[in-house]
Length: 105
Image (cartoon, rainbow, N blue to C red; front, top):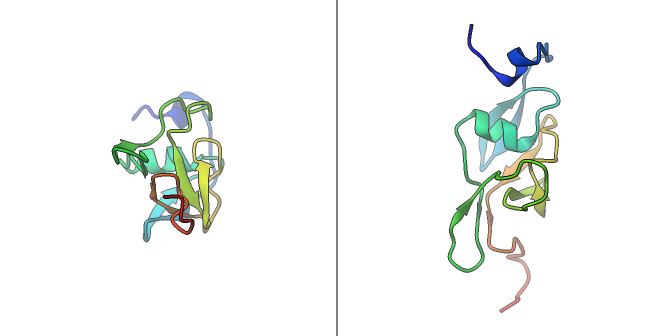
């Protein structure tokens, strides 16, 4: 038997649904965070830093470090480790401060 967090907790989640990440469908389980759904698909980075453009993803997993920020359903700077992966959620990679529509230069 494969050891997964769900099997270790003896959880029996409902059927998977789909979220979208950068235009591609990603399966997610009920109650799973967006970051966990992305991790489960081998996606480790979904943001780049403002200055050097370095890749970032989930680091602390509790919403304290802000490395997991992404644009979720059109809203930038959302902490994906805290947001549930609801059916139909759209996630896009966030570059820099996530405010490309603002001229902050």
